[in-house]
Amino acid sequence: MDLTFSPAEEAFRQEVRDFIDAKFTSDMRETLKKSPTNYLDPDRQRVWQKALYEKGWAAPKWPEEYGGTGWTAAEHYIYETEISAAGAPRPIGFGARMVGPVIVQFGRPDQKKRFLPRILSFDDWWCQGYSEPGSGSDLASLSTRAVRDGDHYVVNGSKIWTTLAQHADWIFCLVRTSTEGKRQEGISFLLIDMKTPGIRVEPIVLIDGEEPPFHEVNQVFFDDVRVPVENRIGEENKGWTYAKYLLEFERGGSYGASIRAGIEKIRSIAQQETASGRPLIEDDGFRTKIARLDMEVRAVEISELRILGALGAGERPGAESSVLKMRGTELGQAMTELAMQAIGYYAQPHDRDYLSPGSNAEPIGPEYAATVTPRYFNYRKASIYGGSNEIQQNIIAKLILGL
Ligand SMILES: Cc1cc2nc3c(=O)[nH]c(=O)nc-3n(C[C@H](O)[C@H](O)[C@H](O)COP(=O)(O)OP(=O)(O)OC[C@H]3O[C@@H](n4cnc5c(N)ncnc54)[C@H](O)[C@@H]3O)c2cc1C
Image 1 (cartoon, helix red, strand yellow):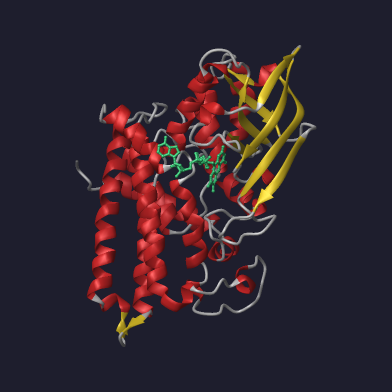
Image 2: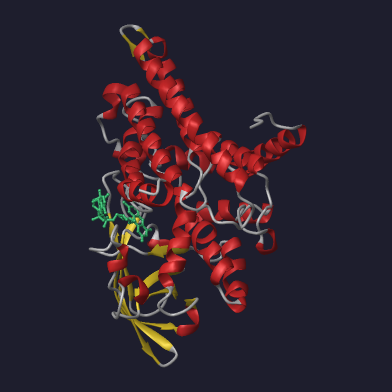
């Protein structure tokens, strides 16, 4: 594989950098500096998403006819690398990365016309209603019921761990439309307007300490929620097929570039921290840990490039997305752990005064240390969401290794 970039690719890199310089404002940078995640608060996040849309970069992997960029594997890689290196916000993935490809593939023409442009422009913020209390890894056991009543379904039940549902305009939901036969054959895929009467969103506060309204996950309750039948994707009781297709896109994101950016941050911290009277970066044991992580991340980056290279726009990522999800999140967690080790004692305090949005308080320790621990805690989620890593191992065993 030739990994040298052509002059045209270097020009593209410059274009990405220029975009980041222009649109990733100092105000956004300050906000993200205090966040345990890579998301901004909703207002700033919308500004960032609009900027991506106006540039034509809202959904790079969609087919071009629907608004995709038609980038080559190298251009995708350059884009991800530059965004991560700059510490720019992650786009909210539930629209462009998840439900968008499902609508492109399985939606009716009128659904494409209605939903895709608003996903691109971020006029609609989407969230994901898959998991339920008691139905996570065993998703096919889900029990939120949708009962047909004329040209509507009446939905009752609850979804849990629903990321950023408190800001969402729409939720895509797996619902049970039949209890006959195999469990997978009684599930349908519904698009539900979050303003429909009977929907209630309750916050769940995680160990990273983010408090409402800045929390990340919620439980969503449906109480006699009437959803037009025309909002169903594809056929009734065939939702499992569409659900699995979506998961390939959810799991197949890019991991290497952001971990690499994290490693660079650790290097910078290790130049400022000391161990036995010398800069930590000169400590052989610590250098070995960084080098080892660096090499493992390089392997993930090469795999990402290989998979991207093998895919044309609009093609499905397949079971390889499970390999990337598992390895990428393991290494991401290792990176957050190494950052904790680098800051030593300053991993102890939870500096709520400094971290509160809008606060002018001084940090307890060095500024770079304040988010290391919240990020470490926050990133524990990564080996759970999108299907836990144990589940990814089962998929790899079955679909790739044929065991
Ligand atoms: C921060 C966060 C955000 C999330 N966001 C969303 C969202 O927006 N929308 C959404 O629908 N869901 C979301 N989820 C839910 C996520 O998909 C589930 O938590 C995940 O699928 C695991 O399900 P569970 O929590 O019910 O755990 P369980 O399924 O109860 O699993 C518990 C443990 O048992 C292991 N286990 C279970 N079954 C097997 C098996 N067959 N083989 C080996 N090990 C197994 C698991 O790996 C895990 O360690 C989110 C989760 C988190 C933590």
